[in-house]
Image (tube, rainbow, N blue to C red; front, side, top):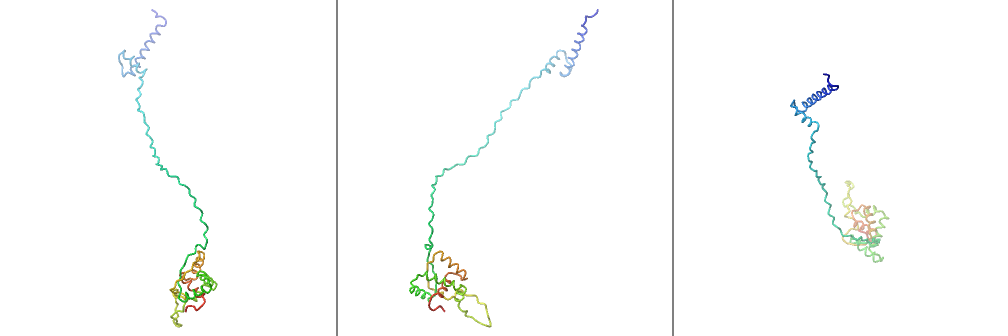
Length: 216
């Protein structure tokens, strides 16, 4: 009998489909099995089970340490007090008594001169210092030195000047009252003369200025 047209083709297609299904089942099912096992293996391959997501614990951010604010202690408001500007100081207001020592002879001549001329102690000292500056301080100091006790032409020696043995020095204290400016000028002259202190300078200039017999 001649098969109906198209039947052979249908049978071949069924056989090819059967072989194809069998091969796929062996590949993904782990080996050849009964015909009932094949559709199950294919079903597992065709539709994979969705993976279950693992729960993730929420991440709690660590708090950022905050520096403690410094404690502010309120200070009482200070009242601004403007100090008055000091008034200019008159040089006469800076005058202070200054003591110095002279010999008995110079002290007597000093008092006699003050009474005779109606002048103050300060004025006498200033006049004596001015006269010494005009004469020349080096000459005044040289005239005040006494001749060395030891003298020899054969044994000439260099004798250091003795500033403790000057004409005019002695145990009697006198005072005068110079201003700050006047004292500064006299101190400068003392340094220029080379004498060690204020007392020695005034003693020799007074001895050479005051009238009367000078110290021997």
